[in-house]
Length: 395
Image (cartoon, rainbow, N blue to C red):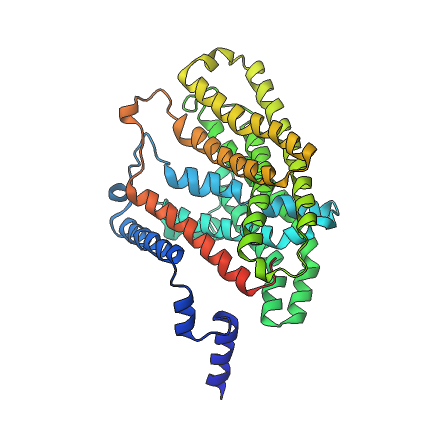
């Protein structure tokens, strides 16, 4: 009898009421086939790195001890995992209840973003099995990396507390759902402090490399640049995720009001414009204060202009026009461009403009296994997000 009850629970909760064969058959589609091919290469790369080490699996060297995994999985990934920070702050601290429906998807994306960023980081650490040391008994209080490690650890716990109401609601545990719902506001307050700290600390890591980072990207304001760009990356990701979710999971949405959804998207665009202009003003002050103008007429200068003008200034101007004519579609397209710009910025600081004096022939280029592993992590985030949203009251 107990086995039958377990089978029934598994069928209803995990297989969505289908038999195992029906479930597999329904998911035997081209996107899933592509996803599993990427995962196969990714898992092979993970196993290869663990068995043979970083040397054979990557192109890392003494000149480039950090490569694609740090630039993409950690620096860009953590910036793009800031929706929980931005929406949580707006809803629970500033009382913007209109955006409460955005909160649960934002928290889930932050939770998955951080969990899989740490998962990917394991493969970039020489002695990954010593990660618990930093939490338990080897405290490097003078190290920014120690601060970041503890912040990641605490922020994942905070995201779990914020996500638990949806999880226990799915399990039918009402008392636990109510208990964690009451903790939500305190978790959010603590989360804002923690997330703000490590987003800026990631930029602070590069303050110790003034001769390695190109002067156009190196600045005493790097921690502030990383924090502000993470905020507008988080808002952009909320718009992108909500757009994709409302298309893919449309059948799960009850009483969906497209006009209301567009109005809220335009509201997020206003916050986005404000953050972009604050960032631009600080960038201009940085150029003027350190007198970096002459670097702009070099190869790296043109690349810098592309990043700042192409992915910050022009999107900000287009967003202002979109808000004026109330066109939410343009806002969604521009949000995607802004998110790409944040990824480009993290690559510029940590790879492209790092060791900028090194000839192209001696530059770092990732191996196919590094690319495969990072691609697999992205696929895992998408699959887990889809799995949870299909089953729990996230949207």
